[in-house]
Each structure stands twice: as structure tokens, then as C-alpha cells.
Length: 376
Image 1 (cartoon, helix red, strand yellow):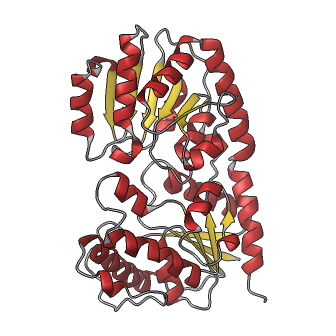
Image 2 (tube, rainbow, N blue to C red; image 1 turned 90 degrees about the vertical axis):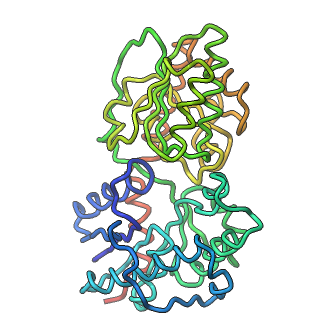
Image 3 (cartoon, one colour; image 1 turned 90 degrees about the horizontal axis):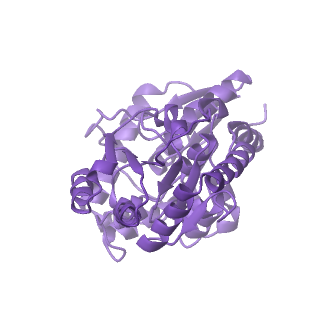
């Protein structure tokens, strides 16, 4: 069986799809399932010129809006690049981005195309203050889900909570499959260590949706109560200057290290103590599973896929979104009691190994792929 894994941009960013698909591809190839990776290079801009039409709605009703126009142009670019680069056929195409799915089904209508919806672009834009829920961008982006339902042979998503979110925008939500993300266990090696001062770490893109302002306020409250810590922030993004200024204003800049972008944070994550990320929304939250596989205690918000990964008080701690005091209390609890922190981390590691292994994902996907394999 020949399978194409179709991404959006190349898998060069840490976390999520980028950290999963290449390892998944390797597992398939080692088992004799010929699998290839395809994506749109970031240098390809403004190349496509083919007309774009959808079968379930008229996108031109939203034309003239920068977000919509950029999305449509990217579809055109993906069509141009795909026509130029793909000269063979596949038994199955598995798309990991809406644009990849729509283009692949358009160009290869007789090939089964599966689509995994990993995240919600419109929610990310709303939480980052870029669009409004009552605006044309939101209407356009949520209409894409219905088009995906119409075009893809199978829709899959990464958590039950995100399946519930999608149900408002499709006709048959019961047909959406759920396969949580998986991770190559060999990439993660917990390391026994003793830190005199608790080391907190967060790994994400520095955007409002990740709630890092809440984290900085919570850490300031932690410091006022006399609890020492060092906060390590790995990632880059548009609000980094604002976060650095806030850390200075709160008096915790000397306790906080901004690293910027890092390709493989999992290489030294095991030497920290607590992973914390107070996201305002997450379809799955891959980085929590990765932190658990590194042997860290995990603290997150009670939203989306995070709440499906963390059982409060058992393998981590959950707090409400934007609740500074609750987050500070959770951090105080895990930083001041090393035995409790260790207990949480051990249970989190066991659950991650059993639930989010790459072997489990490959097994589930092989079963789905067999369903759509063409009869020879």
C-alpha cells in the first residue's frame, strides 16, 4: 500500500503535527507500508492562479477580507505546487490540514482522502485578537468544516472535546473519528535529578491564546508568597516583547528565562520539574503528553484536549482558564511538595506511555487505512 501524508508547511516546528507525522511515517515504512511526506514550502507564495470553488458554500461572499483572500491564495499555491511535484498515484492520501485535504481531493478525486483536523484556526485567531466571532473571517473558516465533510472520505480529529466543537459545523458529527495524537516513546527519556529550586517550563508559540500572561501573574503571586522558582519559556512569537515587559513589571524577570525558538526542547525538558501551560483553548495539547513522557509534573487549564489528558489530582492539576489565583495555588502545591510532584509525574508518565504511544496511533490508522484500501 502506498500512502501519502499531506501536511501544510514542512515539519520543522516542535509540537503537534510536526513532531508526530515524520515519526509516524517512519513506523509505517518499517512495517512495509510505503509512506511519503508532502508539504508546501514556505517560499511558495503567489504562484497559483487556478479558480477555487467549494461545493457547500460560496467563498466569494467573503472576498476582499485579508484572512480569506490569503487562505484562497494558499489553496491556489498548494494546487500549483502539487501539480508540479506529484507525478505518481497513491492508494490513500492522509491530509493533516484543510487546505491539503481540499487540494488533494480536487486533484485526485478517485483516491480515498482522509483528513485529520488537528486544530481550530478560527479559535486561534479569535483568542489572539485577530478576528471576531461575528465577523466574515469566522464565518468563512467555520464553513470550511462542512466542505471538508463533503470532500473527505473520512474526517478524524484528536479529542472528543474537539469532535464536539466540530459538531456545530457539520451535518453528520457521529461519523467523525477520534484518534488522539501519538509520540515516539524513544524520543523521551526521563532523567532522575535533584533541583534545589523548582524549575518550571512552558513550551509554546508566544501568542495570547496560550495564556502566558496568566502564567506570569501567577508566578509573581508565587514569588510574593516566598516560593522560589525559575520559569523557562521556550518558544517565540509576536507577543514576546510584551511578555518580557510584563515580567519586568511584575518583578520576576530575573526568575524567568526567555529562550526563543528551539527545535528539540524534549532533549533537555527532562531536567526540569513542572510543565505548565495555561492555554485558553487546545484541540489536543500535544506538548502536555510530551512533557509527561519527559517525566514532568503537568499543570494545565480545564479546556479541550488538555482536560482529556489530565485527571485532576491524579496525573496532574487542572485550573480554570484565566484564573491567576487558582494557577498560583496549583504551582505552589507542586513546587512546595517534591513527593507529591513526583507522584503526579509518575502517573502522568505511565498514562502517556499507555495511551499516547506512536504504536497505538499506527495501529489505529492501519485499521482505518485498510477500510479505504482499493480492492485489487
